[in-house]
Length: 219
Image 1: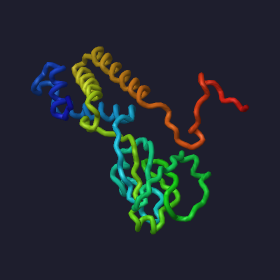
Image 2: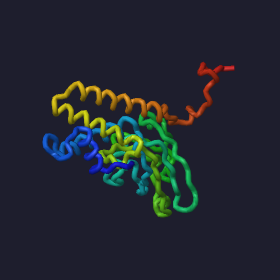
Image 3: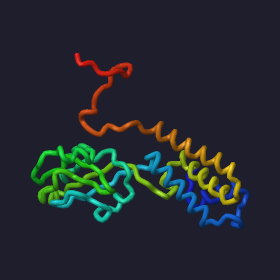
Image 4: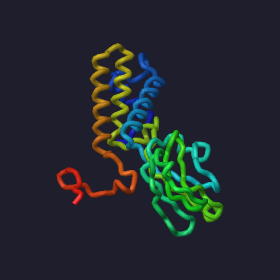
């Protein structure tokens, strides 16, 4: 069942055997739910969305001032450029260290993108013609969130475990809290490893590994 903030609070109060606020306030429980959700989303990268960047002529970098979603984006996976007519093109993701190796180019359609310091850099800079045609970049990304409704149903129990542990800490039941926090972080680590492998970022990594995982032959 999908949890809202209200029903999540109710579930935690059921765990604590306190249906109405006496020792634990709703405000405290809300804060703990939000903390658990932030930890889950930032560590597992499993809160995802697709968001658009409207290109601006002569602009190299885009921040939250340009597109609000950038403030909470923590890992871009892919970017798709739409030229405003009928053409879609995947952009090449580069590491910020590679910027020095990107050849000089006149303004035009984007080819590369990267993220640094919560800003998205697009190369080459966009030309006025691209903007006039309605050029847009769609970014597929993971984001950090404190909203439990952003987590899919099967993982919403994890912020519940976290918040219950924090409530136990307030009640000085430190052993119970420790067990719950250990369970929380173990499940978070498991889901990260289970759902995400090291991503492929550049063309030279698009290779079929040798069978058995050994080194590639030069022959």
